[in-house]
Image 1 (tube, rainbow, N blue to C red):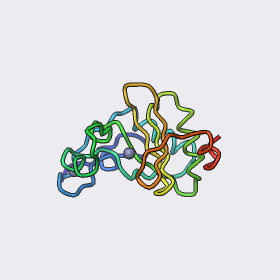
Image 2 (cartoon, rainbow, N blue to C red):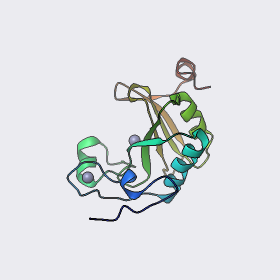
Image 3 (tube, rainbow, N blue to C red):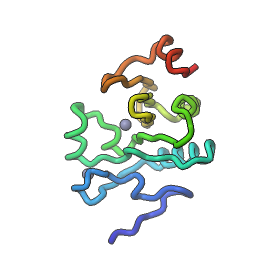
Image 4 (cartoon, protein in one colour):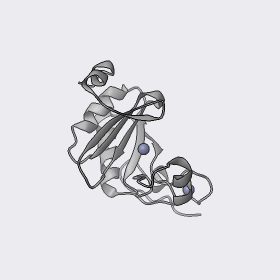
Length: 144
Ligand SMILES: [Zn+2]
Ligand SMILES: [Zn+2]
């Protein structure tokens, strides 16, 4: 049995490993992202739930049509925090300049966070569609 390596105060390797159930918990994760999740836990004083972090190659193919999967690159997490409104998490993440990809996903109550090596992108997902987070949408979801 593999040792569940501790990565930070509150998180271990298994929290970030692939959950497909077929690949024996493959794992690859940017330590910068572990630090961001740890920061959020300290900031909100609540357990951060990591719904998806690393995704192995086979699982990535089945989940995402595009090959630009930052989860598979070990550079993305989807999180939620019990008792904390999604808009509060979003605003906190948006204020962190090192985060270059932010997806606001109200349907599943999750925030996607990634560390892409290019200009920052912020989007909204509604019914599995990726939309621009327009001023109107920001107002609708109380993100200002
Ligand atoms: Zn897998
Ligand atoms: Zn994601």
